[in-house]
Image (cartoon, rainbow, N blue to C red; front, side, top):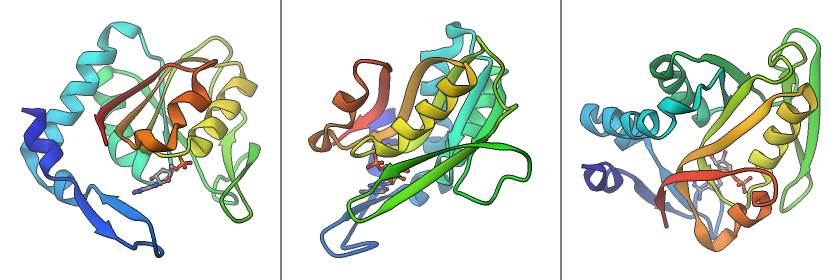
Length: 173
Ligand code: AMP
């Protein structure tokens, strides 16, 4: 059943810039069965893990993280791009191909020892999720796993996280 959902992921060449093959998940999200099936697969994987918080990464991580948190009976915590969160934040800067980017989390978003599942749509080099892991760790959260709809295996993001964080992905390319 997941194979049908995978077929709904669309490849867009040279977006957002030359040389990138963008994985467009909007056709999957608008297909009721595909959307249901991928969330159900994540729920099945993590239902017995007593997740306290799903930490979702801006912005496509929210599209998966919110329904997953609801279905797991967990709270939803957002990791955002700089300057978006209104209360006191922790901030991590991370390297991009050119320059740096940053992610933020509210300082009171995760209490010490809480069990956290980090969610994003796609694992590429792993820089984004590594930054999210650093934020959760600073707050004292226990990262149960990082979960992705899509993993681009050639970019070795999994290896980047291997020492510290379990990685689960539904679809590997
Ligand atoms: P990275 O930090 O290299 O693991 O990149 C992961 C982040 O960039 C995720 O939030 C993705 O949404 C986005 N991303 C990276 N590469 C792609 C791609 N080929 N298609 C869609 N999104 C991507």
